[in-house]
Image 1 (cartoon, rainbow, N blue to C red):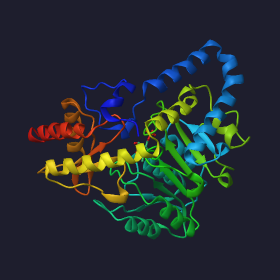
Image 2 (spheres, rainbow, N blue to C red; image 1 turned 180 degrees about the vertical axis):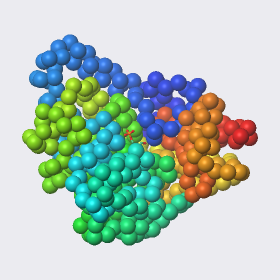
Image 3 (cartoon, rainbow, N blue to C red; image 1 turned 45 degrees about the vertical axis):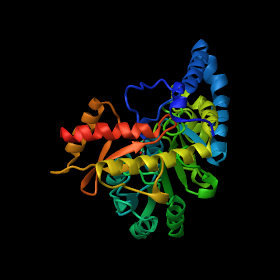
Image 4 (cartoon, rainbow, N blue to C red; image 1 turned 180 degrees about the horizontal axis):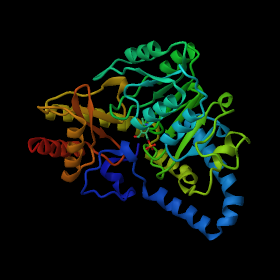
Length: 384
Ligand SMILES: Cc1ncc(COP(=O)(O)O)c(C=O)c1O
């Protein structure tokens, strides 16, 4: 495997005086992808009329084929969207819910997606039913059992995170999808953190919908995400913005929803090549191992505990902060602000009555980064 950490930092335009240990939130786009994106933008702006009509349709489908091969799907099942929030909105807002219907969502589900579930439920007189994710250090069995227990005769859909945001848990997705399907409940997977954090095979998974961000772990340009829809689920699915393709089929509806900059999607192949150059599956395994080492280093340094270990741990880790006094969202937000001012972007989250720090392990990180993170966190806590 190629050298990583400091040896690849020249690939990014990040400010190395600032400690970037939060790749999970917004990713970081390498220079090679940004350069390819600029080329597509220049091509578009040289002849906008010809580009949009004669170049873009095929170029977009070519990009979808590249991405499909990477995530184990067919190109015809992949639509590009700007982000996972948009992908989830398309599926949720296409549902025909009736009063009394239920949608199962996780207690650790992403806030914006839970809001969308609440929105579609409130409009229809339906209900969001929460499946509890135990924390810290939950067992996969307990999570699968809680999802299965939340399903009733009225459940119309389960919305399941692949990798949770605040708690950084890699959920036992295949077992959850199988449990939902055994109860005849379709599954929308919020895979915002999935692509390139863990290997994906969407054919084998068999979920009804999977939306994933490529601008996080795959290091694509910002606004590069996709919605996979199993072929039997494509009828009556619509993007949130209705445009000229309405009624003409899945790809016609999603490929054009008005004028926008498609350059982030058109450079997906460059991002996939870059990911492979860093080591592909070995590189993902290296990041998971680095996150585990960093998490236990920080838990020892702060004399606290880790949020997950073993098979539920991915390229992000959670460490409880050693705080005394009241725990609140405001205090967590205040700590985040202090950490940013002290020179790092590691976010904090309130979970299970405590405030936790989340770290990410990306290509450009080394174990020394987390020693530095420990120093910064200890300083901020002392002053808190
Ligand atoms: C689980 C989950 N879903 C959705 C999102 C939203 O991603 P985006 O802002 O790209 O829509 C995130 C972002 O971190 C996430 O962690």
